[in-house]
Length: 94
Image (cartoon, rainbow, N blue to C red):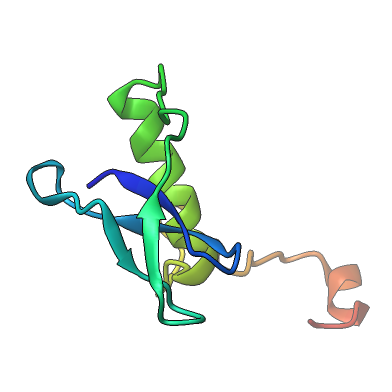
């Protein structure tokens, strides 16, 4: 839904989303509760592709809902290596 700019008699400007088929000429101001008239505003056009929009949306979503990782994926677990060298027995163990 597109956003529309409205301005009340007190001078407060605000944006509200309406479907294209039901855009009113005026709506109630959220601050002073007086009728606010719709203003002419610049269109919000973008030349981004759908892949770029998906990237933008996932970036915004990850800021508030980070993905939870349950374990290491794709990495092989390295076990402790056995050595028969007697000098290695004196080394501290992790």
